[in-house]
Amino acid sequence: MAWVDADYKFIFIDVGANEAASDSNVFQNSGMNKRLQENQLNIPDDCNLPYDENGKKMPFCLVADEAFGLSRHILRPYARKSLSTVKKIYNYRHTRARRMVECTFGILCNKWRIFHRPLDVSLDFADIIVKTCCVLHNFVRCRDGIQFTDTVYDCPLKGIATNPSERTILATDIRNYFANYFTSPQGAVSWQYDKI
Image (cartoon, rainbow, N blue to C red; front, side):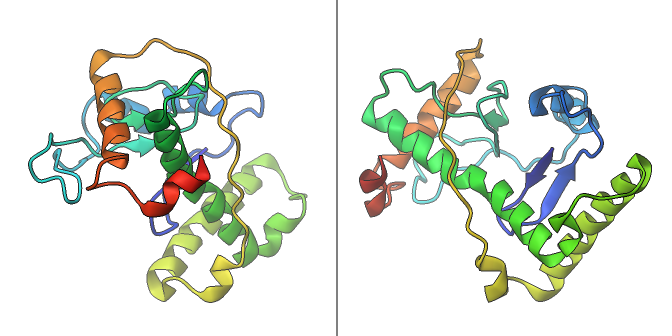
């Protein structure tokens, strides 16, 4: 499981979880989730969204898939049942942000070609290899920035299917605000309507 930033760098990885464990279960038992719940991640204060100076201040959020629970700092897509245009646009924009993880793994695998084949090493050594490559990946990204060869990887958009889950009112309000912002004059992009 991994969280990445907008520069295709890893900000958190959890290597070595049981293959049968879901990302949300791995995250629930992770140190990052514990620190997130205890407000120890040094997340910046809430702020206005771009061009929305008079709107509500929104928290910085992690963009997760449908397996994760909705919370103040974790956003997930809307369930696909009878979605309004606003919710479809939100899901589209959410998926575009979420695919940064897919692209980051693609860049990592193309840079460190050891991942183009099965690792024929012990589990402990495989852990070390993956963690080391993630650290080296971040170092190279900081040093070299984006290179054209990094962008050659095709980052597919996956379908969004969700299961309803219990949500807090605050978390739902945050997601709804983002959804409305993405269809407002301040937050809309002209081509998003062609994608739903």
